[in-house]
Structures are given as C-alpha cells and as structure tokens.
Length: 511
Image 1 (spheres, rainbow, N blue to C red):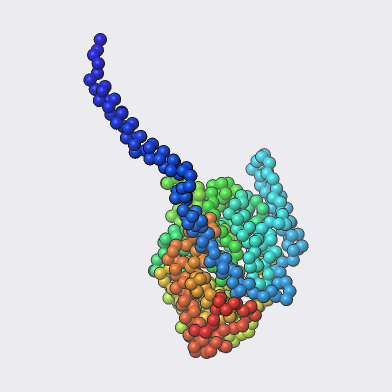
Image 2: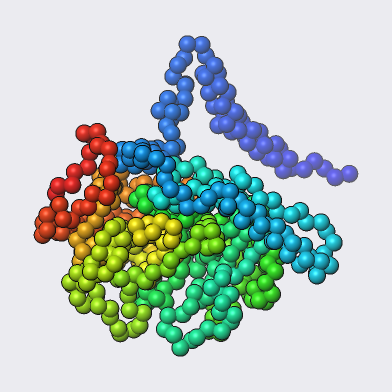
C-alpha cells in the first residue's frame, strides 16, 4: 500500500492562497460597491448627468445640415402657381404600364425557353412607387422639390430592393464588342456600368468600385483616361443638393452581390460570359470590348460583394426627350491640342454672340455647372443635357460625375473658365456659396454630415472634404475680382426674387 503523498499539503496551501486572494481582490470590493450604492441618502453614486445626456456625435453633427436647409436662402417665396411638371401623370402611368406588361411577357418567354418550371410572380407597377413619384415630381425648377420625402424613400429603395434583372447600358450595347481603339477617347464601354432593375420595376445605373477612397489620380493621368469612381457619383448628388441645384439624379451606395444580383438575374449572354473566378476565389467580371476584354481590367467582389453607386434613371426619352449639347468650354481630347477658350481670354465674347448664350439663363446655367465641376474636380464635362420641354431656359442636367473627386491635393482652376472669362453669376448661387463659407454652415461640415446618411459611409476621405472649403474660397475670390473689375451690377445677375434673411443670418455680397 503506497504511503501518503508529500506534496498534497503544498497543493492545499496553494489553493487556499488563491481562494483568499480572489475573496480579497474581487469579491469583497464588488460587495462593498453594491452596499455603498444601495445605502440610503447617498447621491454620490449616481451616473454623471453630462455623460448620460450627451448626444451621440452623429446627432450633434446633423444640426448643421438642418440649419442650412432651414435657412431663408433654401426656403424662397412660393411661386404664384405650381411649377410646370415634366410629365403628364396619366400619360406616364399608361406608358409604364405597357412597359411593365411587355417586360413580364418577355420574362415569361425567357423562362419557358430555359424550361424553368418554378413560378415567378410578375412585376406590378404601383403608382406609389418611389421611382415613379420621382419622375412625376420633376419640374421646371429641378429634378425634385426641396425637402422631398420621395427622394429619401427612393434612396432607401435602391439600397434595399431585390434586383430582378441586370444588363449593359444602351451605349455599351451599341458597341457590341467592336470598339474603335484608334480613338484616344475610348467609348463609354471602357468604364463598366450596368442597368439594374428592381422588384418595383424601377431602374438604376450601377457603377462598380474601381478605385479605393484613399487613392488619388496620378498627376500624369490625362482627364479623359481617368478612372470612374463610384463614390464620386454619390458625393456629387449630395453636393448638388447642398448647393440647391437639384440637377443630379438621386444616387446611393450599395453592396451588390455580383453572383446573386447580377449573374443569376441577367438574360444577356455576353454579360454572363465575362464572369470568372479569380485566383483569390473572388467573383469578377469585365467589359466586353477588345482592349478591355482582359482579366486585369475586371472588377471583383470580395468574394461576391462589390461596392457601387446606384443612380436613379430619368424618365424614358419617349416620354421626356432630352438634348445633348456640346459644352462651349469643352476640352481638347487629345494629348497636345488646345481649344480656343484655353488660349483666348476673350473667348466669352464670342460665346455671348451665339444663341442661346446671347440671352436668357443658358450662360448663367453654364457658370453654375462650372462652379459645381470645380468643387468636385471634374474636367470631363464635354456635353450637357436638357429636357426639351422646358425650352432654352430649362435647367442643365449634371450627369456622369464619376471622374470627380480624383485629386484632393490639386485645384484645377481652368474648370472655372466660364466664370472667370464671362464674369457673371446668379445672385442666388453666389449667396449660397457665401453662406457655405460661413463657419456655422461650413461646406465640408454639411457635406460630411450629409454623406453619413449613405450606407457606404465614409464616402469621401477627410482631405477631399477639406478641399471643398479651399475651392469654395477660390470661387469667391474669382467673383470678387470680377466685381472689382466690372462692378456688382454687371457681374451678379438677379435670377429670381429671394426673401430677405434675418439680420443675424444675412449674407452680404460686398467684400
């Protein structure tokens, strides 16, 4: 029979010491705190009121944007009558009902050809659909009314709704894989974008992420071969709304499952054929074009999810025809050429002699567009579009802004040529720019808060936001030079009557 183990007392002593330490350092202090907290008449253990009442950082920042939109400059006097709408509601509903019925018939035939027996519910066109209400809300004043609840609902729907089809855009379909590679400026098929249709029959243009947010466009890149950035499309919409232009279609960010939401719902065999799995097991796809039909130009999910921007479609051209007009300040799309405005400082005198720039608001709208493009750093505004219904004085559409926000460290002042050469600007535009230069309404602050509403926030890096403030000062400096040269009466155009702001909020035109 074995004798007693000599190390057993040492083990018991060690366990007793550990238990005593736990009682002294953990259990007893906890019991003492609980007894002290429950003692009557002891107010010292209450939670600090400041910490309990402190609002979250996002709630504090939101006040800047609310104050801006509540400012009198953003709440002008109501016009004598309702704004002229772009569409007739009954005609638009009839047209879209026919389109929905035709889509359902084609989808049924497609499923029958593939011998798909599982039932598929037809798409229903609902008059209250956010995309349809957005179309019906377009008027002579802009793409949407101020403080429109429809726009916020449309942004949510584009981020949440299920995709039921995916296809190439019409301009990429026109290429049919036959790009003219002798051109320096490649067709738009170079920059992969897709049309996604949702469960409510609405459509959006999807532009995938091609460049990370913290990457700048190399300074040796020409503007016409720059990347198209999905976050630039999102940020451009928010900036356009802050400037009260309302000329950029609602745009939201979304994580797309490229397998389930594109590959599995597309009927386009060409689009299906450009999907592949990368060596890193990520699902990728690319544009169908000879010089881009390479895996190194593909966009890839991680492994299936891919960031992108979704821009709401405008009404069909059959309902609302649009004109595409060359920008008078178009750039030379070659490596060594220059346009006349780049070498002739008096170029605006020539433009003023040409209709419709000789009278009306067209030239003022061009200056608005130049201000917008300078703020985002977009040098690629070769054309602009307008709705034909609103005539020559209609607003310009600020479409295709994906080449903005490429370089935060550089301010391309040549974009401001329409302003610096013509020395004219709308009074309402100038007043809002001056307001956004005030500390209380600082442009970078309201943009930062507005972009937090997007699912892909942060949309812009901090250097890009700070660049907006710097560029805004350059715009105001250019206006001051014009006023010093020609006088305020000739430079500042009274485009519309505005209510006078309270004295504390009034923005002065004088320098």
